[in-house]
Length: 277
Image 1 (cartoon, rainbow, N blue to C red):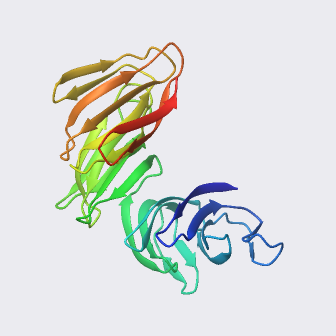
Image 2 (image 1 turned 120 degrees about the horizontal axis):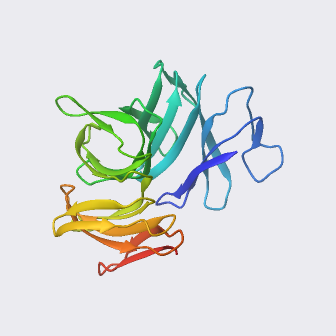
């Protein structure tokens, strides 16, 4: 079994996602609410009360692979990033399906009762992943993560294809409310590069924490910043302007592997990061 995350809504209800095989017990009581699986391995969204009482379950299945990431709960809607191959089926109160052969990465929004609101295609690739996918007040989205190979996005008037220079390249990008790519900033070396997390401040600055295992050169608004690969993994913490231009970068690195994991901010705008070194 593999978890895809858990979130809590404004009323305290808990939403939990997982991939599982065979049989799973969905509530604390033995054998009360059971889900059975034959050959496929569904991605399942479960809802519980604040006290842990089971409410409902929605299952995403496909003849191929199906797995997802629980992005956020905001404005009474659930955002899920879904990776799947072949057609996608959703089993809940109202069954739903999309006939869509091939490899897909999509954003699916649901009501707090588990009904599908929309399905937006993002890319024909399973080598693109999101570590963060954050909605904005104007309906747009800021996303970050890593990718390998070539990935093609839809834009307002065409498409944009990016190809990694290393094994995995890091990126931060913005989609409009129709999930069309508006801008994309690459952070790339010859090795593996990942954005671990982003945080968007009240002035719309985008703070990022990333790791890399090869020397990387970043062109910032304050000049070029080179981060050598002193250990197995080195880290960078910095921020971008709302247009995706890199404002600055601070380096973290030692003789062994180092990783930054999380970013947070208080009400005064002070930033906090954690990880290990």
